[in-house]
Length: 102
Ligand SMILES: [Zn+2]
Image (cartoon, rainbow, N blue to C red):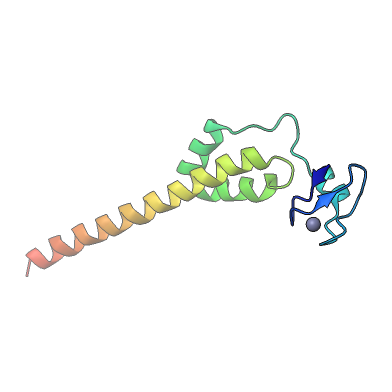
């Protein structure tokens, strides 16, 4: 016996659809990650320094290379957050310097 990944209902080994929620297992298996897909630290670093590139790669690879896409997405997200935090710190620093002159 297998279980439906969607609702947890028991399903027959050779059944294509879940009898409970109607989930299609045939399409689920065709979207399996490729064998050459793997998390990549290199692309995470790339995404960190170039969040826009990381975001684009994440969107492009989402379907075929979900693990690589995840690395890019994570790097891009951390890059974005770092940029925002640095931007805020820089803003506060500049505001302080300007205010000290008055
Ligand atoms: Zn189901």
